[in-house]
Image 1 (tube, rainbow, N blue to C red):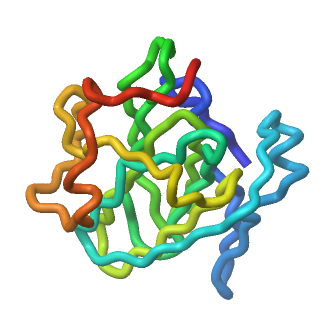
Image 2 (cartoon, rainbow, N blue to C red):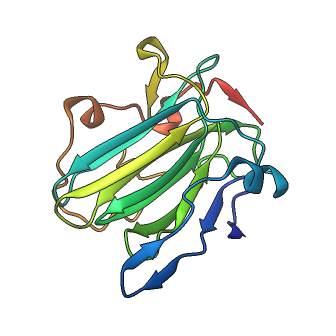
Length: 182
């Protein structure tokens, strides 16, 4: 397993060791001991999965404390552009984002800790997206930032994404009161 630091501290890309042969492939998608040995001491309590058609955009979402969640995300089938935005007050990278392409071929994963808004755009039909969470979902703790906020400037490269009603109405970063401190 290779752990790659991103320009935003605490966001990590994980490249697992994938073993391919004539039968197919095998890899460990998660091994707690291996993560702990690499100083990634998060405990996961919930797994989520979604399936989406091409050009579906989900995000930018987060859970407010005390139900804040870290997420380890990956693609089981298809391909996504995965985005994390730093929303930690006082962070030198507040409002900055990091994007990574995740797909079912490379098996790359992305770790997004608490204090980040997260979203993804599906780049292929029938994309299956999976994520492990460090806390349980709580509806009253849902939060979001508008996916198209120009001050963040995510380069989604899609003209008409398919959005939920909730995702069409998120606040702009300038109007947002972050519940997270750096």
